[in-house]
Image 1 (spheres, rainbow, N blue to C red):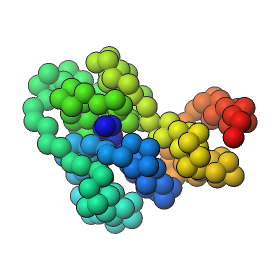
Image 2: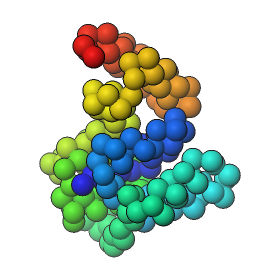
Image 3: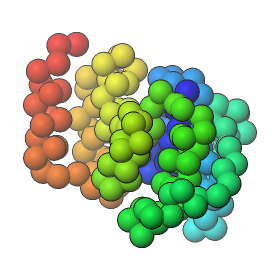
Length: 169
């Protein structure tokens, strides 16, 4: 079982690859705060990806969990947003095998609690390694990810492209 923050859901949905989460992990937990951000606010802003995420929730493979009280994490509230705090709080309760978060500060905080943390790029590369994404698609998907607003350093982008070149399919 894994727990996801907003950005992996949003970006995978924008790439029409939200289903990769289901294919790779079967079941995804999200706190109510993430649901509010990606579905409720997303629909208010007419973001198409919010409908895809809502459909995955309706299908039952993305599950909303309620978390209460952030007192023990309030020292981090100036560094990360409410959704990320809720993901960490839920992780403390559920002890997942993996947390999906893209924000660097939130990743460091989650890792400080001992959680294994990865992000959207990890999902795409894992799907590629498991042949859920074709070799002809992976570079375009990562390029499109950047074009949709996903922030990535030039050095990391080059590292990913080199990794893809070296990977024997």
